[in-house]
Image (cartoon, rainbow, N blue to C red):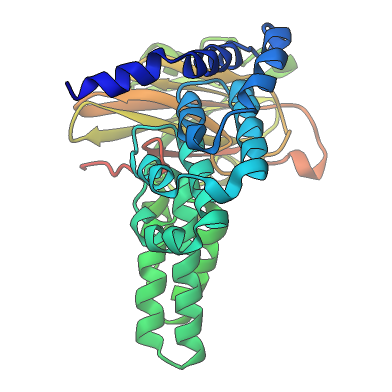
Length: 363
């Protein structure tokens, strides 16, 4: 009997119209398909009542970014028109349900901040371990404020505690940099490679030939078999495997250090990662050279482009770690350019979950 009111709600003409319109918005594609229908549907959705706002938020679940933008804009119109009557309790319940999409939950939190700031403030500390990196920013920012306030009172212990708690929850580089600086100023040790999950220990081999940029597609011996005792004919000299441990806080693996500033060459890096269990993960790369990445012999991604800039988490590669040993192989190609800004022959790679939380090797 308890299902009857819910079924009656779903079958009501008003909700049927809203549901149909939301379906039209969700059907729009980035190629422009469905735009005409979406334009008409948006007019209907934007007339929804404040009591329907969580239905609009729920429609963002699983929708593509363009469809989410349509729905987000409709929520904005409803908020402007009926913001004072938003169902705060329902929006807060929606926010707490981590099964909803991060984008929809972030929008729910924004609504609470504007229309129920006390409720948003109450919920903020609970977001420190949220699966949404965007939502984590709020409690991290609050803890940074608390740490700075403690410093102003010369309470270094309280400041360090707040900053460390914030760092534990922080996933965005800008906040992490601030927290690392504050903690170090207080004499605390900060292990950024461990926090991010950078792989620091590799075996490197180079130089193979990349004249005329042909090396990107050429299959050199490391792609066929990893034999760390082998020596191969390289470009101008033999190519041999060398152990390499990065000392860079952001895990940069610099081929120039062991092999010199070579040009028109290919290098390979191999690393072992031990996973406690089979699980979903992300390999996140930063690289300004041409590169390929294999996991357990399977090519995950390749990019044949040079010196367009590199940054943290530039590329995100969803993957499946197997329980036990996992083998990573990176191919890093350097081209013929001579300008000073083209000398880098390097990459950074970390393993984390979808929130950016580091996954540590069991070894």
